[in-house]
Image 1 (tube, rainbow, N blue to C red):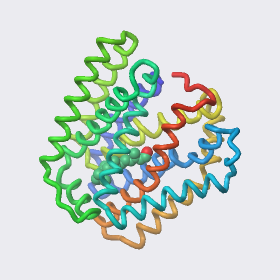
Image 2 (cartoon, protein in one colour):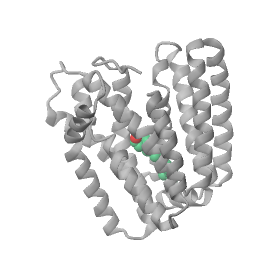
Image 3 (cartoon, rainbow, N blue to C red):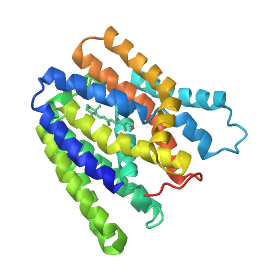
Length: 300
Ligand SMILES: CC1=C(/C=C/C(C)=C/C=C/C(C)=C/C=O)C(C)(C)CCC1
């Protein structure tokens, strides 16, 4: 994982440098393209993960799993259609936890569950509010399009302050309590400084794409492969892509349909994030189960 982080740092700076040559339109287009490829891929093997988490369960027929999965996605879409403000709030809370859980998964046995969950939530909120605080107008306009509610941009900096205090406070407590986490905490602080530079210097979509793909989706794919096979190799990565292919294609076709139906940019952004949210709800649940699951330990 350390090796991967080094690669991610270099690629992040490369992304930032490339960004300065792109027009705003090209940045948005390449940002979405990046999210569509690896970002969507990391959620496309959820059904396989469910089967592996609990292989002995009787109710584990592929059709049943697919049915329950689609039900959660449909419920998410319905919620966005009927009470969009609640749906977006839920999406942001679930995403914050999901980002924090990915980054801080290996502390499960060292602290009480609720402290760890609070820490993971604070971390995720910190990342999201950092991004929002640097691009308040664009985020406001997307939220307005989804919910018809105009959010004050001061809310973003307020969220940044609250989550920052919670994250730093808990980090100090963890640093003091657990020696083995000290190096990781310092590394993560360095990554946060890197994310600040990236979020400040790039456009909203490009900044989000760099974080989402390089710092969330690819590490998640590596963890999933380790969970499914016991270790990571290129051969296993190809098998992972093959298994995910059909679900990935369905997602991409769905998004292409949205794009060609609603060409208006702001509306497309709103629909894109609603779609991402609908597939995030079951995905976050599956990943939580994976981290608590039995098969193949995820060796760091
Ligand atoms: C960036 C961004 C938003 C939040 C996106 C989030 C929270 C994405 C989470 C995705 C996940 C967790 C996917 C699955 O793993 C808003 C609020 C829609 C406003 C516009 C910009």
